[in-house]
Structures are given as structure tokens and as C-alpha cells.
Image (tube, rainbow, N blue to C red; front, top):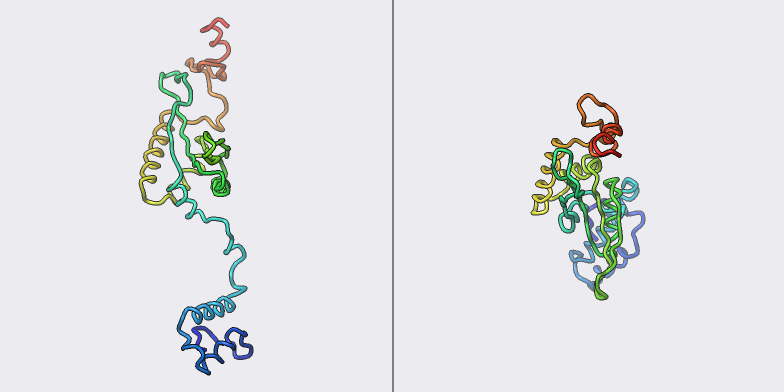
Length: 216
């Protein structure tokens, strides 16, 4: 039998030995069909066995494949975070990335959550008896978006309608951050009264100024 790779003359596998003897006696045709290609492939796999790095054949989905999953099932939303406006009168907004799937695909949600390092998965009971239970991954903190969501989507989300939705969502988030910078890691916000550096108690005011404004 002719093979494309180096031939091991010292020891031939029984499949190859039987196959070549049957070709010689005319029982089967020349070794150019699918069976011959399969045997050749098996030989090639044997030759490179041991040279493949550990984990390269892992069943865990790659970031690129997870990006494709987001393109099909992901969503991006902007919604009011509170009915109470900011001190300047603007609406408080919550920027959310999520994926909702049938619970049987929850392992994919967990893979994305582990890849991002953020988010939580919750189960949603079916609304009707014929419906499947749903699982939903939610990432809602701005810190998580800047640390993981945006870098991941910029790199792995495929060019498609979902990519355009994401880019509009991302740009709105960046604009919101410029207008209302997150104070994560910066300690409590200072009182809005000019010259007062005491931490906020409520309504943008420290405890003493809050008492003066409200009487309690």
C-alpha cells in the first residue's frame, strides 16, 4: 500500500497488512478510496503522537467559537438603573451584556463566564408547560465591561448585525463614562457642596449638609 508519510517497514498494522494482501489478490481495487485515505490518516496521527502540546485537544470551546456563540445568542441593553435621577438631573443608566439560552446549553454560558471572569448565571423557570427552562448569563458592572466585556467583544465578536449593535452599545457606555466617571476604587464620593470633602450620606450631600437640607 502506498502512503503519503514515512512507512514503518519494521511493523505493519494488521489493517494495512490485510488490505495490501487483498489488493495483491485482486479482491479489492487500488488503494485510492476512502478506506485507504482513512488508513493513511491513522498512520499520520501515529507519527505525530506525543508531539501535540497538552491541552491542545481540549474540549473547552475557544474564545473565537464563544464569540460566534455571542453573535447568535447574545444581547446588549441600556436601561434606567434607578427611578431617582442624578444630582444633575440626568438618568442613571445600567449597561448590560447577556446571553439567554435553554438550560441544556448552560455549559456554554459557564465557559463564557469563566473566560470573562465576570458575570452570574441564573435559571428562569418556563412560563408554559411546553417551554424549556432558560439560563441567562448577566454582566452588568461597568468595571466588568471595561476589564473584560469590551476587550473580548472587540477581538472575537464577528462582523455581523450583532457586532454593530455591540459597537453602538460600547460607544454609548464610553460616552456615559466620560460624563459620569465610575468611582470604583476611588473611595466614597465627596459632598457636592463646594469646599466640603466629607463623604456623601445621601442626595450628593454629607451627613451635616444632608441634615441642613432635609431636617433629618
